[in-house]
Amino acid sequence: MLCFLLMGCFGLSGNYLFLLLILCVMPGSLGIIWFVLWMTLVSSSPDRSHRITEAERLFISKCLDSADTQVIVLRLLAMSQLYHCIVAVVQC
Image 1 (cartoon, helix red, strand yellow):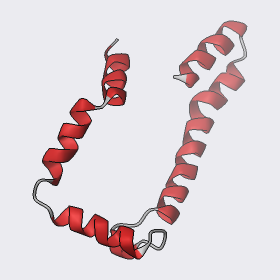
Image 2: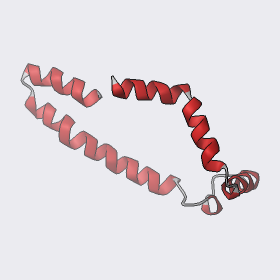
Image 3: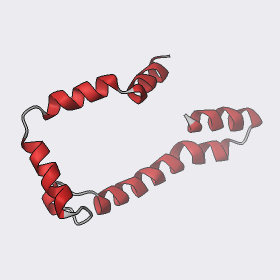
Image 4: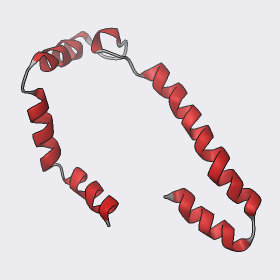
């Protein structure tokens, strides 16, 4: 959203070099930074994570073993005000 706003502002002023920077370089750089952070901070399972305590690890493992986890998550999502706000903004 920010890129589109800046694109309009700088496109009207005639500064197309900065427009190219916003459209090509900035999103690519942010994507690379995001990828590096994701690969260093995220684990594929709770058992491999070094950032959570043993109690948290046991709680997550117990919840993942439960068969009703997807139903609970979908119910929480359906009742979330933030989810409804995001849907409304995207649809409008």
